[in-house]
Amino acid sequence: MKKSIHPTYGPVVFRDPGAGSAFLTRSTLAGQAPGGPGVPARTIEWEDGATYPVVDVEISSASHPFWTGSARVVDTAGRVERFHQRYGTKGAR
Image 1 (cartoon, rainbow, N blue to C red):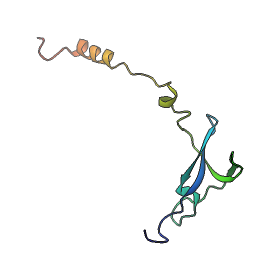
Image 2 (image 1 turned 90 degrees about the vertical axis):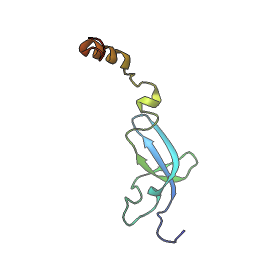
Image 3 (image 1 turned 120 degrees about the horizontal axis):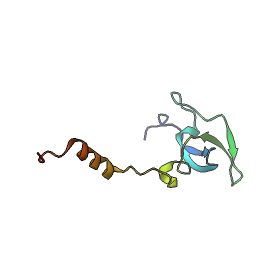
Image 4 (image 1 turned 180 degrees about the horizontal axis):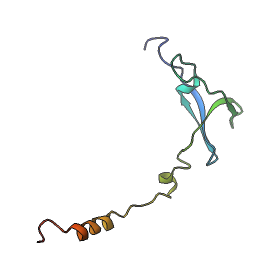
């Protein structure tokens, strides 16, 4: 790899305030990048006692309807039946 062209990759906490959950992972948001967003201004003390930059997200796996099981199921069979009732089938004349 070439030196000094890659962004810094380090630990960052992603937090979902709506769900009250947070997780520690690694991201390029941990370092300063000339053309990027840079290090988040806010920090948080994690469970291990260390302080990490924190990024607040609107939706995570803890609050997304698909992952929480509250997603709606679309009734496609009912829609197909209504289409056939409305417009008939091609061979039925």
